[in-house]
Amino acid sequence: MAETDNTTDDHAGLSLGELQRRVHDLGILKDFAETMLGHRGDIGDALWEVTQQAISRLGLEDCVIYVMDEERGDLVQAAAFGPKNPKHREILNPIRIALGHGIVGSVAVSGQVELIEDTRLDARYIQDDQRRLSELVVPIVNGGRVVGVIDSEHSVKGFFTTWHRDIFLSVAAMVSGRMAAVSVAEKRRRLITHDALTALLNRSECLRRIQERLDAEDVGFALIFLDLDHFGVFNDTLGHVAGDELLRALAQRIQEVTPDDAITGRFGGDEFVVAVNGDLAVGGRVAADIVLAIDKQIDADAPSNVRVTCSAGVAMAENGDSAMELIHRADLAMYQAKSGGRNRVSLHDATLAAARRREQRLMVELERALESDDPSIEILFQPIYDVPHRTPVACEALARWNHPQLGAIAPAEFVGIAERTGKIHALGRHLLRRSLLGRKTWQSSANAFMLNINVSPLQLRHEDFVADLVGVLAEFGVQPDQVACEITETALLADDDRTKAAVQGLVSHGLRLVLDDFGTGYASLATLTRYPFVGVKIDQRFVRDLAANAQARAIVRSVVGLANDLALGCTAEGVEQELDFTALRELGCPMAQGQWLCEPLSAEQLRRLLCG
Image 1 (cartoon, rainbow, N blue to C red):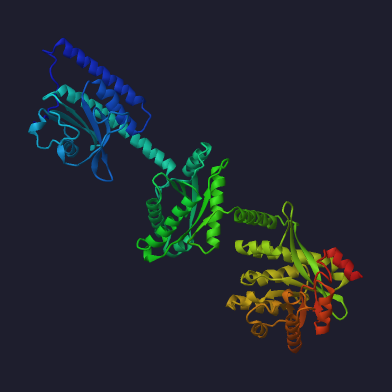
Image 2 (cartoon, one colour):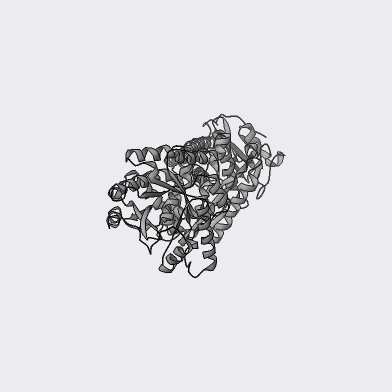
């Protein structure tokens, strides 16, 4: 029969032995209460304390504690004392019970105590390891809701009394209080350690756990660094609310394809990290699974079916690493994946990583140098010679960066970095001012001497480029017709309104246009007729070994003839030996420049050259 009476037995008529047992039981409750108050472990530890300390000391045969599985909506065995627990903190064949099923499931639904004197008379009884004749089931209630059940059975019929019931209710109340405290602590801990948006580990917790493994010299794991491709476009197009929803969906998919023991977190923005046990190959396979999951599975959940992909880099943990060093290597590999076309995985490579580290360093130091007007970024002047008379008639301003630690940085390298980072406009202004400062040194020696400056394609597309250039010329008192802008054909391939306006603006202010690297593009003749150039420069690849290369001589002869027919100036670049210069003179090329004629000079060196 079911017993729900909450009163206790009267003490009258109890034997001395029974009174002593009850005093003993109350002492157990007192000890258990003190244990719960001082308990600092998780709730699992607390439940085992119930069974191993309180229940075992009460002299009972068997006890199992069930807790509610919120995700599955059933009860699962979490701690035990008796035959189901012959080993320390291990349950043999743990079972689950559906809500409403059996006596345990009924208590979970009703929230009422069940005291069964004879289980043979109760059809709800579920036999687990063996049948026992009496059963006491007490709910663990937290916030008005059943969160667990304490279930004790005994082989003696009618063993449990209302005294046992009250003892169990007291234990359940203490466990409930401990569970509430643990729940609050867990929520507080999650707020500190987890990302509020995705519920993954946050940046600081990821770093802490990775560093913990590294400090323990546990280097048998690979670190995956993930970054979404063009996520900013998604945010700008559909808004940040949709972006947040997408990040939540992606976080779930990342978890679905990563091992349960992985360290998985949101590192910031649209960046994620995953640390997985195994070598670099294992990390690569998991990373590939993630990339595929994001690419193939997210479309159905993404607003407007926008396709989202990611790039992943993988690095292996090494002895002596810090967490940030390991993440940095994986980050470098990720950038390699992006450079390779995105939506792919790249494994860390020492050579590529060194190149990326150099690029990142130069990015930072180039910006710093431009902000401080650092003189290490300077201008040299290479004279352009009149070929028949072998006399200098103009010069080209050439950018140089003498890095204090890394030495000479090739112009193609730092100009490319400036273009990729949006610093090309600041670099262009810096170089123009340096060029005009140098011109002040030698202009009195050659007032009609033309100064050629190089213009990047990105500069042409900047809306303030022409106004800035003309303004700096005015500041230095230089007439625009004393400056020629060297522009490559690739700068004009877009042929858009902004480029056309910039070219027209340069010409309208009196600057001259020279088509640089002529002969290397696909439509050079059309370009010459579309824009008002005053000259062309023959690319140095046609000038090298000109004396021995009949095909190169034919090309140079054609370009010289074309320039003469169109009344354009013509300069051959890259003259490095006397035989090439002689060939240019024989072909009628009017102007040339190169190392053999004269190396790039400082402003003072050029002044002395012009003074003769």
